[in-house]
Length: 243
Ligand code: SF4
Ligand code: FES
Image 1 (tube, rainbow, N blue to C red):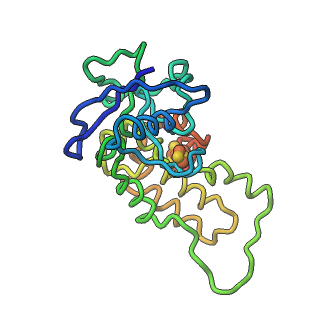
Image 2 (cartoon, rainbow, N blue to C red):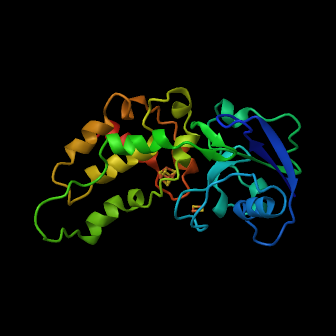
Image 3 (cartoon, protein in one colour):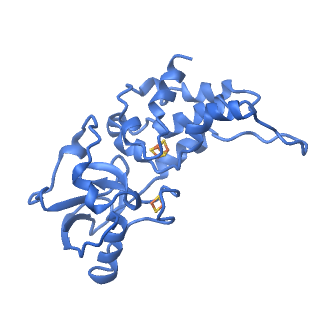
């Protein structure tokens, strides 16, 4: 199997693609393949990872034009998988010479500036969470804030978000409008608005409905199809738009 990988000689953009032939092993993931290339062929190849188990959200990248976690994607499964996303240019532009029958194409996650090779600058993605203050404000005292199993169930799917930014990278609105705060931040805002322990849920709905938030979403739902944790941000955004 061969991997054609986007590289960035100067940083800031893809400058060329390199082709590597890997030794395929049973159960091998795309992340394993990248390690093999880095260890045995090219130590300069840059990519992010940490947990290797679909928990940390670090290894998001474009695999055959679909945004996925490298540690959760087996090399042998890549060709049989299709997300059926609504496309935008980053998902349709292919490098010259790519042979999809024999090669897997690996590129950085779209909609964020490239730092080097498969590493993107996630500042914009994280800044949205910070400016929207997506956390529960602390209260005085030492009392525990309990939650019933039923109330917990209401927010369960949103709590599962691992901040991998795959929804952000798959969103055609994020492609066109850099100011859009993106699906993950909106899903998180809904998570806190629905949390039974929160005293002022309207504060989260107000920020979610701000100019660069839910009003910019066209409910295309790429985020629902691409999210590796079943968070379905599009459903939360629909509820934010029509509470
Ligand atoms: S909502 Fe899903 S795709 Fe988006 S950051 Fe969270 S886990 Fe990743
Ligand atoms: S390495 Fe942590 S999610 Fe892939």
